[in-house]
Length: 311
Image 1 (tube, rainbow, N blue to C red):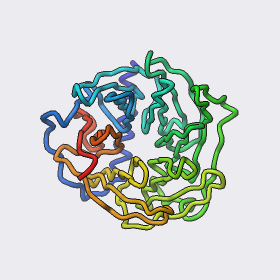
Image 2 (spheres, rainbow, N blue to C red):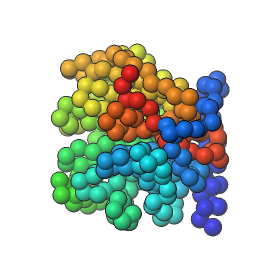
Image 3 (cartoon, rainbow, N blue to C red):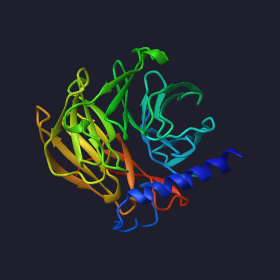
């Protein structure tokens, strides 16, 4: 009964995405084959991925909220967490020290936390109406984006993994260009990552095709100048390098940030014949693992695609 209801919900969500996506779509990816593709066996939808311990990854089934666990070395993945009914799984990040997985809850307006050792649901937070899209971790907590509102949400987490209470959740109103109203049926904030010793948050803005640096204390934003990043989705930051997933363009752009985060240059464009609307990415040394959302073909097998992190 649960899966039937969620399949109906998934169909409605995919129909909505079809309205938002452009009519001129990129060429369909080739059928997956070889060691560079890991199938999420049984998944009917997908969106988020997170790096776990060593070569372990977690990937979410978007419309049911279930979590798959896999290994990039073994090339296998299987359903690990059977999420409670009514959940979604969008962006996610793993706190490997404390065995916790933080998951953005999409249109449910929630954030979820799971134990990565047992698979148990640990905590649920009500954040805000809209579409809770992605999450990043800092030493003092987890930050979530809302694609329908210029707001970020902070859940405090101690270094020992103690989670804040519901009353501890903070809302950061974002000002500047990134805080301007959205056009109808558009996604605003999407991917998020921390930079500059976690003092600054970098947020991808899908409608504006841009990255913004957001002061985590004041909420003031400044555009990181560079070429437009069409269809920008999930992002990953390491030092002065940003990997920006551009979903409908079927590519990941590797960007180089200047020291003051005022601008970036495109150093490389990573592609794969197996990309089929990649949305988020995790890094394992010199390897990137990107999950295919396949919004236009929700019933087909969903995969994690492995590509080099550097040219």
